[in-house]
Image (cartoon, rainbow over all chains, first blue to last red):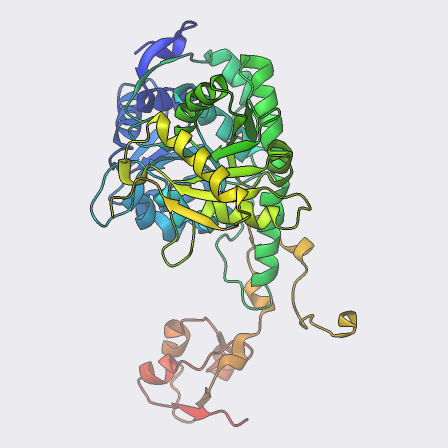
Length: 396
Length: 103
C-alpha cells in the first residue's frame, strides 16, 4: 500500500483512505472493536500496525465500551489516540463517550454513521450520533471521501490544540462514504508533520508529576465543571476555523464551518449535513437550470454549533427545507430542524422552516427528493405555517 | 429585582478555578473531612486491646494511627472515619464498639 506517498489521486475505498490518513497523522494508539460499516477502517489500521507501517499500539478490545476506556487511558498517558465505531457500537460506548471531553482528552473518533436497531438495520442514517448529540465532543460531518480523509488529519490538529483540548467525532456516512471507492489525494508525510507536530502535553498522567483524573464532583462542583467544559467547547470554534485555514495553506483544500452552494439570491435553501449534500448540489443545479431560486447550506461543524455562520449563510432566504437523517420520537420534528428553528426564532425576518426526514436506515435519496422538498417548503411556507414535518416517501 | 435574589451556593467552586479536565493534585483528599458522613463511631476498650493492629490493617480508609510502643493502641482519626465498622468486625478481641452518633 503506497497510497500515502502518492501526489496523484488514488482510487481507494474511503475507509482505507481514513486509515491511511490516521497513519499519516502518526497515531500512537488505536483501540477499537469492529462493527459494520466501520470495520474496514480499523481492519486496515490493524494491518498497518501489524505490517510495521504504522508505529502504534493496536488494542483489539472486547467491546466498544472498552475501546473508549482504553482510548481515554492512552490519551491520559499523552498518546495520540484514534478509534472508530458505528451505530450499536457507539451506543454501547456511550457511557465512556460522555466522560472523555470532561477529562479534556483529545481523542479522535471516526463514526461511520448507521441506523440504530430495531428493526435491525446496518444502513446509513444519523441516528447513532444524534443519540449522543449532547456528549460534549467537537462534531464534524464529512461530505465525501477526500473530506473524510483530510478531516482525519485535521481532527487531531483541532483536538490537540492547546487552546482546545477536546475530543473530536468525525462523522462519515456508512456505506455511501465508508465503502465507496473514490479518487483521493493523500497529503505528503513531511507536510502532515509540518501541519500536525507530535502531540506533547502537560495534561497527562506522569509519575514525576502525579495528578488524579476522573474525579468525583459533588453539587458544589458539578455545575461549574459542566460550565467550564461547555465554555471550552464553545471557545473551540475559532481554532476549528484556524485548523481548516492552515490546512488550506499547506494542502490547498479550503474547508469552512458552513458551506454555501448557489445561495446568492436564493429564495429557498436546503440545509443538510453529510454525503447527501452531494446529491443535493446536483439537484440544486437542475432546479437552477429550470429557473428556481434555490441553494444549499451544509453544516460541516455540528458541535460547537456555528450559530453566526449559519445565520449569515441563510441570509434573506424565505423558505428553509431542513433535512434530518434522524427523528425524535414523540416530538414533532428532527434535531437539526429543531435547533435551526430555535436559533431563527428571535430573528426579525426569519424564514419559514419545513423539516424533511430523508434517507432513514439506508432508504435511497434520489435527486427528485430534493426537488420535492423544495416544492413542499415553498408550498407550506407560503401559507405562513411554521412547524411542518414530513417523513418523505413514507408508504402509509 | 431578580438581582436581589441570591441564587449562589455557599462553598461552590468558581468556574475559572476548575482545572483543565477536572483533575486534582495528589493528597488533596485530606482537605475534605469526610467524618461527618458517619452514623456510628468506633469506641475502643483499651483494657481488652492487645495492640494487634488488625484495625489499622483492615481500615479501608487508613484512619487508624499507631500510638506507639508505650501507648500500645491504635487511634481512629474521626475527621475521616466514615463509621463502616470493619475494624469492629475484624477485631479479634471484640474490643471496638460502634456507637451511634447523636445529632
